[in-house]
Image (cartoon, rainbow, N blue to C red):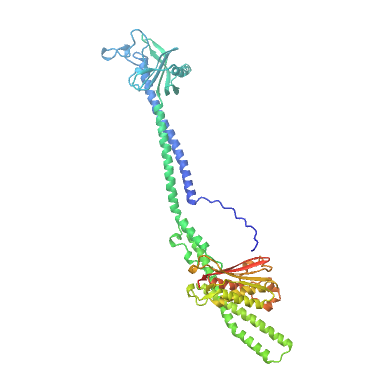
Amino acid sequence: MAVRAPVQAPPRARRRPSLALRTALGVVVLLAVVLTALTATSLVLSGRAVDAQLEHQVEQAWERSLTFLRGPGGPDGGFPDGAAPGGGTSPDAPSEDGGFDRSPLEAPGQPAGMLALVQVGDTVVEASRLDVDGQAVELSAADVQALASVVGAAEDAGETGGSDGSAVQRVQLDSGSYLVRAAVVDAVSGDGEVSPAVAVAGLPTAEVDGTKAVLAWVQVIGSLTALVVAGVAGWWWIRRSLRPLAEVSRAAARVAEVPMGSGEVSLARYRVRGGLAQPGDEVGEVGHALNRLVDSVDGAFEQRNRSERKLRTFVADASHELRTPLAAVRGYTEMVRMTEPLSQSGRDSVDRVLVQADRMGSLVEDLLLLARLDAAEAAGGTGASGTGASGAGDRPAVDLGEIVVDAVMDATAAGRDHTWTVDVPEGEVTVAGDRQQLAQLVANLLSNARKHTPAGTTVAVRLDAVSGAGPAGAGPARLEVEDDGPGIGVELLPTLFDRFVRGDAARTGTDVVAEGSTGLGLAIVRSVARAHGGDVRVESAPGRTVFAVELPRTLP
């Protein structure tokens, strides 16, 4: 068996994602960026709108509280002298004991949850909030302490700014987050005296914060849902749009799988169908370009096929025409040799002419056989007599074991300086085909072993019936011809079965004339094997060369 260096497997290429997937992912990423920007903008604008609404409600509560604190007769309004229209007494009139009893929470229209704090000087005279039932609940000491900073900021702003120091801000209390407004106001005491005070009014932000959280969740979930739906729908649509491109790709793959090394090749049936080869869009341009390539290659193959047909016709005609003059040359040479008195030198020359005429005749017969086999292969047949393009059932059954034994006997007689062994099964090993062609196949293998190995070489011939599935339930017949000669050059192995390929000894040695090597023997072996539905291969290394032929076997 040939010793071969270990072949390093090429690194496995990383599988790239499909074009549809990459395009869909790109669309999803772009859509995600757009949705993120829209969601962020929407949340900011909606948050500002809700905050502005809350601030407006705080302003309204503040105005009601300010009007109530200033009371009738105050600096900006109320009922003059505490007299209500119609001579009645205002409910906001000063108390008789002169104490401060005005709470902003008592002003009409104040919403639930409102917070109010009134500080006169350093005394907090009011610090409470309305619960859900509209009842006033006192603020805790911690809440009052937290509002002290708001009161101080309002006092400082009133002293430095020349105004009432009104300011709106958020504060965090034990009862929750509030949006409050604080300012220095003129409050009316129970005895009607107007005193500067700091008033704080605010509303809870829990409802607003909840609204903004709901809006945020709605925006995020809606955007994610839209993103998923758009991604799936986009991926489906892109795959559907690229389906014609996949068909063009499959057409190109089918073209690439066509064996183009030899024989009649036609690519017309591999063209892209008309609907996918109309210029106008990307797929149509690719399909049209592929069809042009197929047409160009098909035209080149058709020209090659015509050249090969002409060459086969020429070889067949020339070989056929050479038969008659070669027969005449041999006939006249034999007649001269038998009828004319010749010197020893003349006899040697005549013998040499006969040898060359025989060699030329063998070459002509080999060329004729190859031409017939090539013509049958091009026509879809086998080249074996009696078969044509029909199946194996029309071929006569031939005992390959008998052919092998006869060929080994002939080779033993021709090559007495070699050692020959044969091993064939006791039963018949039958194949369907032409007996003469199969005999020439075996003879050519043995002749090749005899001509290209030195004296003393052992040639072993083995025939086996390989078990396994095959026609009519039979495995193939395997013929091996093995020798322990010097082997075949590595550079010669790839082209060993081509025509007119000869080993170095055949090209340069003296045996060329004596043996008549033409370089067609192994080419005939391969052609005959393939014509009978089989094939031949070779393994060679110094000290061991094996030719193996496998042919479909039939049951006897």
